Image 1 (cartoon, rainbow, N blue to C red):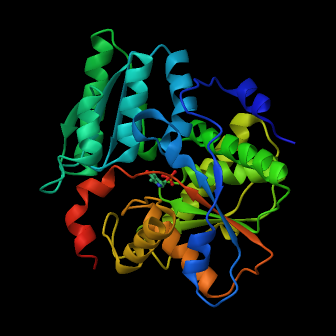
Image 2: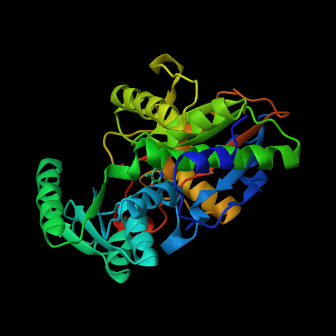
Length: 338
Ligand SMILES: *Cc1c(COP(=O)(O)O)cnc(C)c1O
């Protein structure tokens, strides 16, 4: 059975996250999702509390990505994403902590978004470079990496979301951590739900569940209409990670569980279902979600609970992947969900 020591024997880890994150009861929220209907026990895994600069799921991936970067002698890291990228913010914070320079090649913010993650990027000392499209961003990354290498400041390039097989190890470790928490509570949850977007979290969790013999369904909730491509990406990441770890496991697209009902029309577009979920978590638990990822993920889980998929004697876990700084950048959309 897979352990943290097995992972650490295969790849260097730089501890920067506050682990283990808490696994907490959310009984008010559970009751409010479907009043008068039998609902499962609901627990929340608080990966919004991983530490650095407001935390989130990317910090777990960065423990392994930064381990790899330092091993390779990098003096800088370069990454990319949306203006309100949580991944870029956590990468910048990790770089600050480890004494590396961070370059973030981001898409320009919409008006009023010099807030939230973008504000934190500046505070932790990252250099932010704005480019209009993903293609332009990719070109800029290559140019920048070449310039830094020539200046004797080699950069480690981290793709969108930190979703490489190395980054995914962070979520294999998270599954091992969950297994220990489940054992301590004497529970065997029926399912785990979370926002799935660039595939690293999902792929890593699958490897951890299969390798660590943790039962229960693993449900990714999509945050944009991309389930087809995402399914392929998750399988690619999980399979490359298993070969990196030397595990005898293989995954296929037909076993990937993705719920698409809450994705809305586009990435970053706030929806009425997400709004209901975000406000319910806030009002019943004092728990803050974000408009781009976690509110949609909870909306997907709420739909399944309302369909009566789980019995009251079953436990369901919601993995809170973070993203809360985006709340402030989305203040206008929060007032007007579509
Ligand atoms: C990046 C992110 C996700 C999705 O994680 P992936 O590994 O990219 O699928 C979910 N929630 C939040 C808050 C994120 O920032």
